[in-house]
Image (cartoon, rainbow, N blue to C red):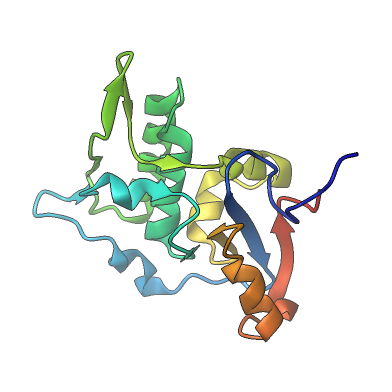
Length: 180
């Protein structure tokens, strides 16, 4: 007999729960892109692999261009044979919206079989979400309608926040993954 333990999350042997939430309202304040710090050469330096690590803890709500870009880098460039192509795609979106940005410098986590790993995500929900929902990477990064919740199934902070009324569930259009 199959028993469902988690709801509205990918079933894996991991205890992390990554949800992509679509809000009914969308906007991107003009100053949103100012949150990315560029050095004097116009390079966005991501200093540590911790900045590119999204597991089950700590709880994170990723809603800014900067935080969603870091999540995309970790999702698409971690343990992936097409990492450099996907990284270039992310970098192009960043440069399009922040013309002062000339490059993105990533920390090296470790080498393994001649591949470089940058941070990690316990679940790669982003690629499937973009494909299933027909959302471009650019739209995901630049529209506040899309947020990412990083939580652990042993904590369920996001669910508790919704149940307590801290989060206005009427503003949630959809949560991904769809309920299993």
